Length: 91
Image (cartoon, rainbow, N blue to C red; front, side, top):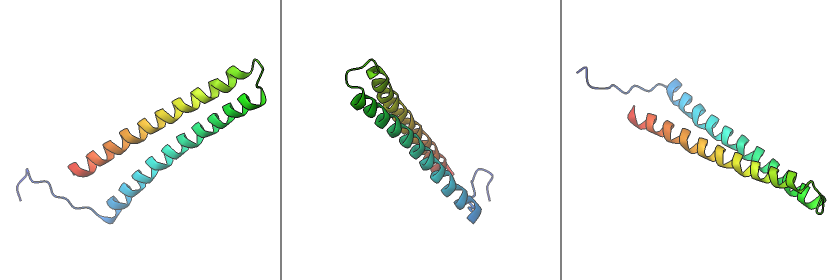
């Protein structure tokens, strides 16, 4: 066998490690999503209960922060998924 030929010998342990990595990436995204939705719901609650109050900016702030966290989580999920796929296909 030539030294420039890459031998692909995946064991069960390697396949399971890949599955765990993919699942961990999905769990992380779901944690970001759960946090974002909690903040958005809290913000909407502030807007509903304090309609004519100085607390409106807190509700709007929660909504903005929730959207930012969702965008960051989605970006991280896609970037990590792309890196995992790239590694998987270059093996």
